[in-house]
Length: 216
Length: 320
Image (cartoon, rainbow over all chains, first blue to last red; front, top):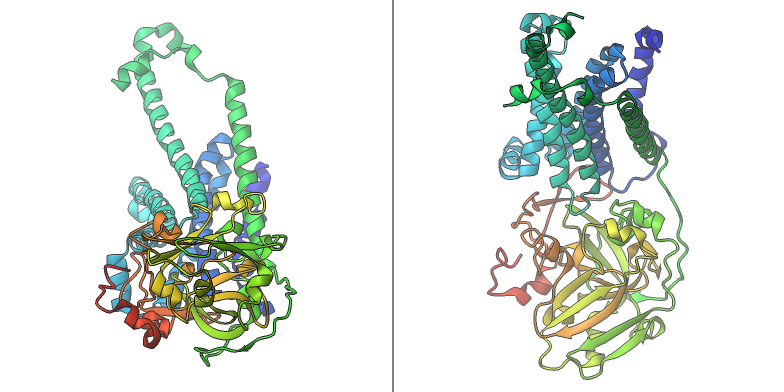
C-alpha cells in the first residue's frame, strides 16, 4: 500500500481519474445527445463536482491519520486544485452563459441574492489557495502562515454547501447530504484540536502527579 | 476548566482499541463506498442519458386560437426535461419513473359551489368539445421556456357545464397522488398532493386550457397524463398535472409552492419580467435547448393583450 502510494504512476492515474467528470460532461455533446437544457446540465455537473472535490480534499487529513497513511498528503494539492478547476468551470458558466459577461448585472446579483453571494465568496476564497499552492509560496509564507491561510477552505466548503442549499427549490436532501459530510469533516478537526490540547495538558500535568509512570 | 479536567483522565478513559479500529473500519467502509457509489452513479447518468420513446394514442384535432408561430420544441425536449416532483426532483427523473403510472381508468370530480357537481370520466372529457391544437409558450419560474403544441379545449367549457353558483369566486385544483406509484413523492420537499388555484375569471379565460394531449397524441405520463391544466400567462407550476379534483370555492385556495415558500411563489404567479424571484432575476429566459439566456421575458408571457384586463387596478408587485 505504502509503495503504491508513493509511486509516480499513482499520481498520474489519479490525475486522469479527476478528469473523468470533465469527460462525462463533454461526452454527451461529442456524441450529439440532445440535452434539453445543456447549460443547466453543465452548471449542475460542475457545481456538484466542485463540492465533491472539496469534500475529498478535506477527507485527506482525517484519512491520513485514521488509516495511518501519511503518504496520502501527496494527493491533497492536486485534489484541491481540481476542486478549484471545477469551480472555475462552474463560475464561467454563470458569467458567460447566464450573465453574458454583463458586469453590472453580475454585481447586482452578487449584491442582491444571498445564494449568489455565498457562492461567489466560496469561489473567491479558493483563488488565493490555488495561487499559493506551490512549494515556492509555502516557503515564502512560512509553513505556519500558509496553514492558517489554507484553513479558508473550511469557509469555502461551508459556503459551497449553503450555496447549494439555497439554490434548490425544495429538494434539500442532497444539499443536506453534503452538509453532513462537510460537518463531519470539520467536526473531526475540532475533535482533533481538543484532543491535541488535552494531550498537551496531560504531558504537562502527568509528571507532577505520578513521576514513576512518566519515567517509563 | 478544560485543562483541569484533562488531568483527571486515566488509562481507563482511553477508547478501547477494538472500538477505535471499528470506527476506522466503519469510516473506511461507509465513507469511501458511499462516495464511490454516488460518484459512480452520477458519472453513469452523465455519460448515458435516457432517450426513451413514448407511444401515445393519436388524437384528431382542429386548429385552435392563440397559437404562436415560434419554433416548436422537440418532443424529446418536452418529454425529458420535466418538473413533476411526484416522480423525482431531477428534470430527467419523471421520464424514467412515470412509465408505469396507471392513468386509466381516470375520473375528474367537480364539486363545491356548483349547481351540477359531478364526475367526468376521461372518455367524457375527450368528448366535451372538439380537441384543438394550441401552440403556447410555456415559461418556468426557474428561468427557462419552451414552445409546446398542446391539445385540449378551454377550461371554461367544463366550468359552464357544472354551472358555478354566485358564491364561487375561486377554483381549486388537485393532482393525483399515490405514494405507492410515486415512491419518490416523499422526498419532494413539497406537500403532496399538489394543489393549485385560479380566480374564477382566470379559469373562465379562453386561454386557460384543459389539456389532454400534445404533439398530436395523448399526454405522456411525465407531462401530466391523462389531463392537466395549461395556463400560459402564468409560471409553469400553475399548470397543474394529472388532475383529479376541481372544487369551486368562496375563498382563495391554498397552492403548493405558495405553501412551501410564500415570499417566493405567490398565488397569482403571472409571468412578470419586472418582479424578480427573490433568488434570481426574471428579466430574461433561456429558450430550450439554447445555451444562452438571451430571450427577453415578456409581461404575461406575451399574452398581455388577452389577459392584462383581468388585473386592471391590481398592484402586480404585491400580488406576485
